[in-house]
Amino acid sequence: MGRYAGGGLLFLLLSLLPLLRADSRVDPMIRLPSDLGANRINGHDGDESVGTRWAVLIAGSSGYGNYRHQADICHAYQIMKAGGLKDENIIVFMYDDIAYNEENPRPGVIINHPQGGDVYAGVPKDYVGEDVNVGNFFAVLLGNSSALTGGSKKVVDSGPDDHIFVYYSDHGGPGVLGMPTYPHLYADDLVAVLKKKHALGTYKSLVFYLEACESGSIFEGLLPNDINVYATTASNAEESSWGTYCPGEFPSPPPEYWTCLGDLYSVAWMEDSDRHNLRTESLKQQYHLVKARTSADNSGSFGSHVMQYGNLDLSVDHLYLYMGSNPANDNVTFIDDNALPLFSMAVNQRDADLVYYWHKFKQSSQGSQQKLDAQRQLLDVMSHRLHVDNSIELVAKLLFGSKKGMEVLKGGRPAGQPLVDDWDCLKSMVRSFEAQCGSLSQYGMKHMRSLANICNAGIRKETMAEVAAQACLRFPSNPWSSLHRGFSA
Ligand SMILES: *[C@@H]1O[C@H](CO)[C@@H](O)[C@H](O)[C@H]1NC(C)=O
Ligand SMILES: *[C@@H]1O[C@H](CO)[C@@H](O)[C@H](O)[C@H]1NC(C)=O
Image (cartoon, rainbow, N blue to C red; front, side, top):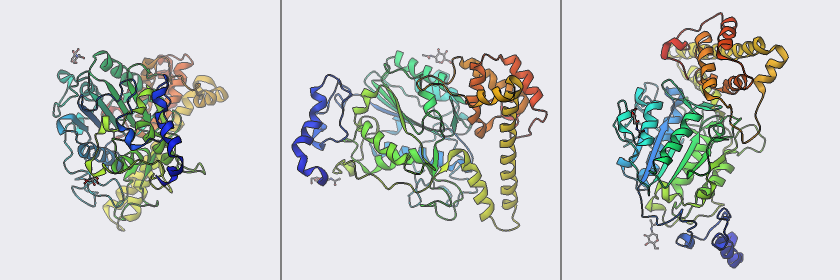
């Protein structure tokens, strides 16, 4: 606390300010650890012994090139576990194809940091493989076991005093989050489920941490502030989020790894949670630390804007209320300048698969089947990207003409407005496009804003179907075919 030694009294007054004000949002960043007991505002921080802590952790991807999302989720599990949550209250969704993947240099082990230990050990396999799907995720959140298909049947069977923490990590796009199965997870459906959960009266407060590209768009203009949900997102509504500990970066994963080990925002909150006393650190303090670390780069060449949504009053709550706290950190005083090192580089999540295929190609031995596979995969992925980009562009030009078409594609909406007014329209646009042009796929989620703009411009799905048929003369083959695994909407 050296920095504040001289200003002790001022500091104390500042830290008491919230108690003196009716406006509970006033909350100085720094607090004395001794404020632990005094820090109760509007009952949010209430009696921390009341109620049960629940955590729902979900990795939305599959495939070794997406190693990092399941690594993030496993790491989060270890934090909850060390914090004292019981396995019966932690529900994990992950495809579970990483630990024993033939490309994993350490079979049965997953790491989330270049020098990190195993985070896979002990992780419950509640929902794995095809059981990682939107229906199960919603059923788990709502505590509705009769709506489940497969899995451990564990659900958030919560009561009115309980606190729920939800953490999701994967690819996304405007208004949409990926799943390893189809359909993907749409923002309107997610927010409707949160509202329904609130209406059931089965939580006191819920915190949602979200890692994905354009993740701000999931809550912007959609998440109400009166349902006791507080959310932070890796990026704003219009930018990608970032993978980290990627090959070729510093710090780099061990040389035998050709994939990124984590994501920037995710690693930032988890490494912070690992080392601080969560009894004295508030959500708001973590938000600021994570925001600073995720937008680390002053040159603007990487990093994103971490955002917060929903009921911001909840951000004065201690992390302890949601994640528990590792007793080993009980004596760690929270000071805002003991933040972790800034990252020196990161990879745009959308390009992380190219980095993976490239390093796999580079590192595989000359003439091996693996090298040939990596080369073919890289070329396939690049050509599918081109196909999707060109098709969307052509559709817009056919609909609106060359000049206006490009304007519609690039158009945004004012901050605070949702991506689209008619979500059913957006989903039907996705299906019409995919029926003619093949799956948007992981990469193609980036075009969701263009499809939303086409809806906002009043185009009907029949028109879209006709135009997509003209634009896409070539229907891609597996795995890019929408016939392969169904539509993403
Ligand atoms: C639970 O799921 C079943 C089956 O989908 C549905 O009929 C029922 O209405 C759901 N109950 C609640 C409380 O959401
Ligand atoms: C924290 O400090 C107290 C008092 O000095 C000590 O008894 C306790 O063992 C310490 N806990 C940890 C985890 O270091």
